[in-house]
Length: 85
View 1 (spheres, rainbow, N blue to C red):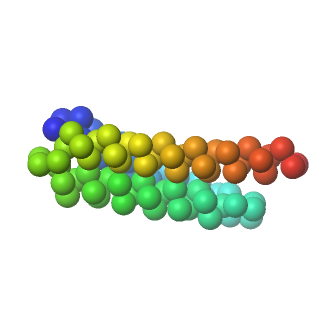
View 2 (view 1 turned 45 degrees about the horizontal axis):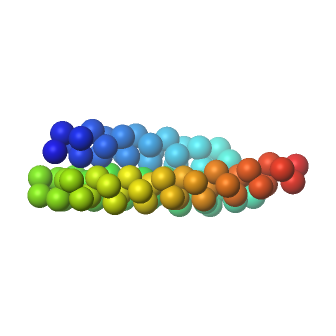
């Protein structure tokens, strides 16, 4: 249960910082993926808080997996765009 709360705080911090970075990357192509990643991070933090005491073990695995997948998609896209430059 403590791990779930720590991850919820992490997702909030990660979501807000990713949103900030998305608006900094706004002139670049694909900035909306970073925005989507930040919104998803905030949403995952809210989901962790809502289902905290009851589904903490299952929720931690699923939500961390979703976060890793979305982060990986954004980083892959950013890598392809940087390669073009």
